[in-house]
Amino acid sequence: MIKGLLRFIIAVIFIASGFVKAVDLVGFSFKMEEYFSPSVFNMPFLEKFALLFSIIVVVLELFLGFLLLLKLKLKFTLSALIALCVFFGFLTFYSAYFNVVTDCGCFGDAIKFTPWESFLKDVILLVGLIILFILYRKEFTKKDAYSDNNKPENNKFKSVALGVFCGIMIVIMSMGIINEPIIDFRDYKVGTDLKAEKAKINKNPSEYKTVYSMKNSKTREVLKVNQDDYVNQTKYWEEGSPWKIEEGKNESKLIKEGYKSEIVKFKIEDPTGIDLTDEVINAPKAILVFSYHPKEVSPELIKNIEAKVNAQKGAVIYGVSTEQNTFKTIKNAMMDGTAIKTIARSNPFVLTLEKGKIVDKQPAKNYID
Image 1 (cartoon, helix red, strand yellow):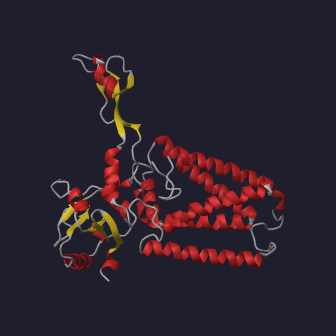
Image 2 (tube, rainbow, N blue to C red):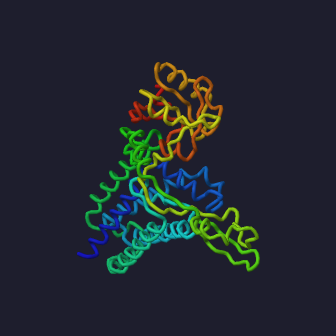
Image 3 (tube, one colour):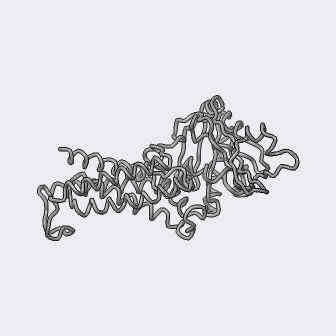
């Protein structure tokens, strides 16, 4: 009874984790790119394979999780899941210890974990899997445990169930890659009122304080000093003081958690740096064409998109990208590439707002069809 319940819980966790990533594979691939970036594992040559690695990881989670749920190939399944947990545990520990990836993406955008929470989750799962391995060891087939020679009872029904499950997951993953996720867990889902969200953020903002890294030029002692102590204690800044701020080693520390929303990153500027955000979210209608990799978009597609949006009379129209001269016949605007990726996964995509409320969001190729 206990081992059956434990097996069920762990299987559901892996299936749920795999499912929310399967829905948004492109989004998970962005997280993989973070791990491959120079600031983390310094393997930028693997960034172009991020989507492939994402598919492999998600398929393993879903397939092994469902095998565990069906109690199929237990020795193989538990061994593979333990190896997967060790791998994830290493990634989350590295992220937490060195503070390089603030969200592992374990449950996509559905549930956010801090790096240490993610590591703790992996440790708990690993312990649970090891316990299951011990509890079920007597049920492992002794002869050729990794082959299909010893078929368990109801194998036909379980095989059909596994096939149907895999088929459904393939469809869901394909739709997320070709278009947008069929379930949107992001803060930018259709129906979100950006204007209202901005008001909530402004009413209850997060508060940060700077922590300075101070080094004594005489004793070589290094101290961490928050901005209040730095201002109030003259020994750190008075003329002739041996204490000097170490450039590049200052930290921003969260003092009070405010209203949490990814909308805080929604800031559109013109090429000269003028903030256009209020104009966009206050307009009766605004059509925004976004591209986080404008160099990868064909000139022909851009031309067709511009022709379509220019036909929408009375709307505020901007082409928003990471380059100043991406668009030719609509006004260019700038936005951080990571922030653009948070809004939608397609490159490019079209976002339609009415008085700051998202009423439509779709890949550009679908928008012009």
